[in-house]
Image (cartoon, rainbow over all chains, first blue to last red):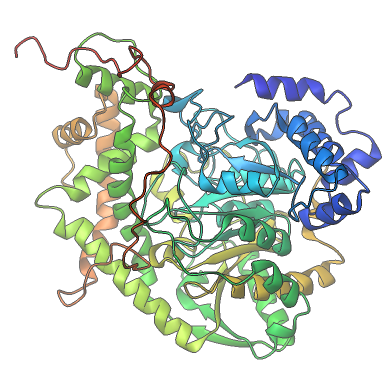
Amino acid sequence: MSDGTGSARTSGASAGGTGSSSDLTRLSAAELSTHLASGEVSSVEVTQAHLDRIAAVDGDVHAFLHVNAAALETAAQVDADRAAGVSLPALAGVPIAIKDVLCTLDMPSTSGSKILEGWVPPYDATVVARLRAARMIPLGKTNMDEFAMGSSTEHSAYGPTRNPWDLTRIPGGSGGGSAAAVAAFEAPVALGSDTGGSIRQPAAVTGSVGVKPTYGGVSRYGAIALASSLDQVGPVSRSVLDAALVHDVIGGHDPRDATSIPESWASMEEAARRGASGESLKGLRVGVVTQLRGDGGGFQAGVSQRFSETLELLAGAGAEIVEVSAPNFEYAIAAYYLILPAEASSNLAKFDSVRFGMRADVTGTVEDVRGATREAGFGPEVKRRISLGPYALSAGYYDAYYGSAQKVRTLIQRDFASCFEQADILVSPSAPTTAFRFGEKMADPLAMYLNDVTTIPANLAGVPGMGLPMGLAPEDGLPVGLQLMAPAREDARLYDVGAGIEALLEQQWGGPLWAQAPALG
Amino acid sequence: MSEITPERVAHLASLARIALTEAEIEQLTGELGAIVDAVATVQQVAGDDVLATSHPIPLVGGMRPDEIGETLTTEQALAGAPDHDGSRFRVTAILGEEQ
């Protein structure tokens, strides 16, 4: 869609590359950080390897909407500073992909919508500014469902992203681009945003790790808002430690976001490193949420099987498995699909054909032009949700719909509080199924919404959640995700426990799950 | 039974400022009807004694010091606009002919 994409694609003539170049793309951000610091590799080499990989496979995967034409130049500056003895942050020189929902000064930011095609924001999102301050290398902007409304990237105005494990299937959504980029070794780490599961569900279906931090834990300044009481920005990676490293870079108070929590945070990196020994699992009370284990149907057999096996593994490692009940989670999707449209209809009012974005070429008053612009610029899912918003908020219906949904939210928070009295951490599958096929759920919006059944409660209550791989489903050989949830402000606990579980599983698999991913390109 | 009629969808679309086509109104009538029926379950759950939650993590304050910081220049603010005259956004007529 842009010059940046074209130039990067042609620059990677040696695509798929030499042994060393493809090896660099399989290293973690933590490993790259070590190799860069020791001078074994340069940031230019690492960045070039990833650009080559993008050139080789992104024609199939379509994870990127825009590739950063200045990536190599930025990498060269890091290398020059390192050579000059400048003290650099740990992730300096490590590439990262950025979801297109985040504003970037030097790259278009479309949020997957035609209405913002080609728009270059006049400022960086705080999280992007923090990546730059950490001297990371932005590789480009990743594909997503339009304004983050969707679970498959099929609602992107620029065409879907394909799942690297099976190109005939969806990569999850809305952040399918970031998850696919990481799973296809086009980037070691990425940023996503999660309003109802848009980091965790794509992580699940692509065998990646993704974290939705505590609401208020990471700044949303410069994140194009979907539903402001639910949205949270977070990391996507191939390992728990890498997610922690990125979380430490982007997290913490931002005076530009009024919902940002002012307290300081524990180091997620330390938690992940500590957790890898598995010591934290001994005596840990792991709560299995009855309502999220799919006993009532709708969950794929292979997902349930891997989940049961993971619980057995945890018990074997000394964890105490307790069954906990959250009866009001049953109403989470209903509450979410009232609260989200209400907030989204208000947030998307800013696309008025006056200040930024497209303007339809029609005559008439400013109101006529606005209506025609939004008709031409928004896709079907956006139109559905922002028409539903005014309904939920209208006089005569407010109490019955929006008001009731907000009360359900209170009850869901109480359920979480009760569960966390009985357990230190809550677990469920990250998604009810593995990656589904393109088109499978497009004709039925409600079927698509149900895919978020396991992830939505955490957003409604503001608690942090992590998705990490727990194996492949026997029936289709596709990745299955495990979700961990911790009390608000206890994000470090996710990394501690997540790293322990990851180590146990990798011991069983004889290496990381991504080593089993099919070759591309 | 759903309360969503084509007339209501047309009204909602006008509130959302989208000039929907007739075909879209027809399709959305069915889709929004199904969604509204599905989400109506929220009405069965909470009694009058339950307070509404509008914000998941209550924060007090959230105000930054009242200091002059960086702001966008006029040029930056206008840079992404579909049309402008160098100092202001330019729009088509704000009043219809009948006014």
